[in-house]
Length: 86
Image: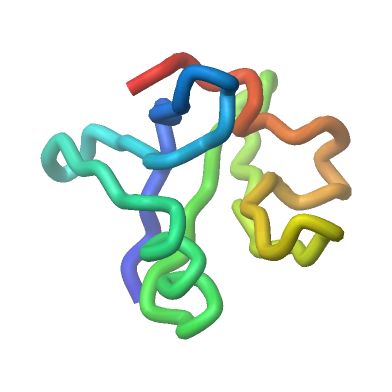
C-alpha cells in the first residue's frame, strides 16, 4: 500500500472538496471518489502534516449527506479544510 501526503485541495465555487493534490514523488491529483475507493479498498493511505509536523491520517466518514473524507477526529478540527487550493 502506498502512502500519499495531501498538500492541497481542489474545491468548487461553494467550497466543496473535489480533488486532492500532492507533490511527491511527482505532482499528483486524485478525485474525491477515487480517494474514497483507495482508502476503503486499502490500496493507498493518505495523510496530512499537522501544525507540529505530526502525521494525521485521512479517513472516510459517513455523515447525513453521505461519505466524506476528513482527518482523523483524534487530531481535532479537520485539517483538510485548512489546506491551500490545488
